[in-house]
Length: 222
Image (tube, rainbow, N blue to C red; front, top):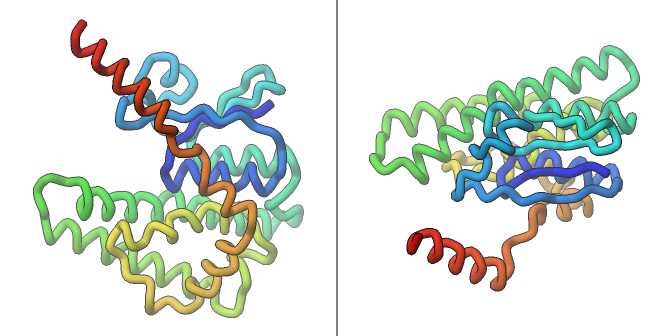
């Protein structure tokens, strides 16, 4: 059994989408970021960086994998799917996964933070991250010219990039000029496994929220 410790973020959805595409059984353990569960000792023992997601492969001696790109590679190699067998194409897919991890994700993440969450609005900082995100969109758009997917068939390269492109509005990045991305985005979004993966973890129920409120109340009283 595989266990995915995750939350509702693009990096988390990358892994849940791949697991749904693979069609393998897995357990979901939601991690409440606002409660800083990801900083608790038990979690950091699995993921030294204190971030989500983390994958535990219980069939492999409870082997833990952290960093979403590394998890994509681990699962693709474990099951021999969504990564090419040809050495050159395999390298190309990995290059685009690394591109997402080092560029697209961090830049859009910063654009989102300074646009949505930072108390003080810093126009020059926001502009810097939005413009760099748009530049990276241009790189992606050029790669998709004349292609259905980033490298040959649908792969973990597409899975890595899709949830971040999906969040363009939230990051304040205009996508309207990138026709190749729009075409590719619609194609990926139509996949049933992608749609299922975006629902992981499921939203908390009313009962869950009530229990959390009671627990917080007891904590405050104590």
